[in-house]
Each structure stands twice: as structure tokens, then as C-alpha cells.
Image (spheres, rainbow, N blue to C red):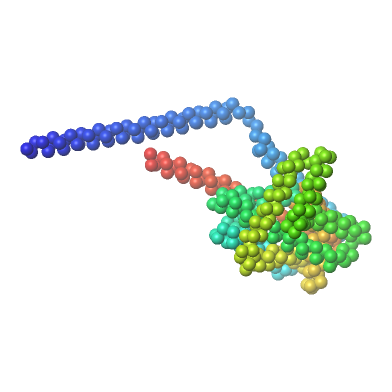
Length: 419
């Protein structure tokens, strides 16, 4: 009787052993197959590397060419600032080193504090809208998406690259495509209306800010600024027209697109009309999302109106630091008006960040109050409101690439250890 259970247990052990052997065999076959695939992929990659001509792809070529173009534009802009600053100060222009060595330090520190406030205000829009539209938001990603948006705005003509990249970045960080689009577009629409209203008020009420300049130069800046304003105001005014009078706006837009199609400016009028209708729908949807949370909406509007005031006042502290003028409310308003006239005067120029032109208009506009420190004021203003975002954007981009590479290596190592 005792032999049967023993035989039975032996048979079970043998079955277990067979199963273990089969399992190990399968595991070994899987590992061999994976290694074989890796080898084949490696060979294919090496073959492709050998067979592919050693030239950049079209997209990489375009990126390199655009970066070279941007560097050339930046170099030309700096030369313009130096030459104009020297000529307008009638040979009494101070070098950048002299300007900084003789500056009022406390006002320069105020300027840096204003710059930091500008960054916080822009990032807070993403944080606030994320809370309303999605119910979640984090401070660091909000700051990151703000800085990267400014970076792509500054390296693309008409500042068209920022919104697209911000949508992509938010989507990569876990937001759905719809959520990412909503957050970015709400911020864009609210900011756009605020900037236009503040700018219109300043240019209307402070038209005499340019009186200290040559009459022809003052007229040129005024005409250029209002032309640039009209260019920037076209989209928001069209959106308002579509919301208030949708049938009339659709009729006018259809007729306009048809005319542009006939004279070969617009190739696909149905596509253009589709884009226009989508923009209007996005605008209505964004407004509806924010109107459901009135307190958040009021806070967003406040931030959007406060930001252009802070941004336009930034050169005021540079003028106080370098030109050593006495601080006053009249000077502050005057500087803000000069800033907006100089910026809008070149708004229709398609170079990245209006580079090569905005430096010219800014230097000309501030020639009446900055005198011998024109180059110092213009260069510092431009560096801290334009070049700094390009440097930060490049640093973040390089950091992201390195971090992605390190994570991939870690994952590969972890997989290797498991096997």
C-alpha cells in the first residue's frame, strides 16, 4: 500500500521537472529570438547608416538654416543698436561697460524684479486655466510651458510657433489633446484682448509721447504703430463680429475669401472657411469654460490686464538705472507709451521677434530721453525681453533631450538585468 503513494509522488515530481524544463526552454527560445531581432535591427541600422548619404534630412536642414538666420539677425540687431546709439547721441555714447559701471544699482534690481514678475504672471495664466479647464495644474510645468512658448514665439515669424508647441508640450505632460488646446487657446484669447485694449488706451491718450522726436520720425512711428495695431486687432475683432452677428460675419468672410480666391491669393477657400469656423468655435468654447467659474475668470482677466502694464513699464527702470532721471508718474507713462509705439511700429515685419527692426524703432523712440546711454538701455531691454528667452528655451530643450536619453538608458539597463 505504501509503494503506490510513493510512485504517485515520483510521477508528479517527474511531471513537474518536465514542465520546468519546457518552461525554461521556452524562456531561452524567447531570449534567443529577442537577441536575434536586436542583432537584425542593429545590422539594419548600421546598413542604413552606411547607405544613407552623410547629409542632413530636409527637416534638420531647415532647422539649422533657421538657426543660422536667427543668429545673423541677432548680430545685425546688435550692430544697429551700437551704430544708432552712437549717431543719435552725437558721439557721446557710452559703452556697455561704462553704462553698467555708472548705473543706479537699486533701479536695475527693480528692473530684474519686474522681469521676474513678468515670468510669474505669464506662468500663472497656465496654472489658473489648468485648474479651471482640467481641474489640475502644477507650478513647474506651468512655468516651463510659458518659457518654451516664448522661446518658440521668438524664433518664428509673427510669433506663430508658441501656441502650437504649448499644446504639444501639455499633451506630452499628460493632458488630452482637447485639454491642452483649451488651456492654450483660453490663455491666448484672454491675453490678446487685454494687450490690444491696454495698447489702444496708451497710444490714444499718450499721443504726445513722441513730440520730443523729429516731426517726420514721430509721424512715421505713429502711422507704423497704428498699422501694426490694426494688423494685430483683425483676428479678435473678427471673432467678436462672429459672436455678435454670426450670419453677417459669415457672409462678409465668404465674400472676402471668394475675392482672394479669384485673384489667386487663397488656393483652397473651403479650407480657409473651415479654419475660420473652427477658430470661432474654439473661442466660444473657451469663453464658456471660463464663464462657469466667474471668480477664476475675473482673476484671469486681472492678470491678463496687469501683465502688459508690467511689461511695458520694464524699460522705465532701465532708464532710471542708466540715464539717472528722477522717477515720476509722467515719465513712467511716457516710457510705456514709447515702448508700445516702438513695438507696434514693426508688428507686421515677419522676422523672428521683429529682430533688426524693433531695435531700430526702440532706439529712435527713446533717443529723446536716454541720450548717451541709448545703446545700454536698448541692448539690456532687448536682451532681457528677447534673447534671454531664447537662451532659456535652448537650455530647457537640451536638458529634455539629455534627460530622455538617460531615462532610455536606465530602462534598457533595467530590462537587461531582468533578463
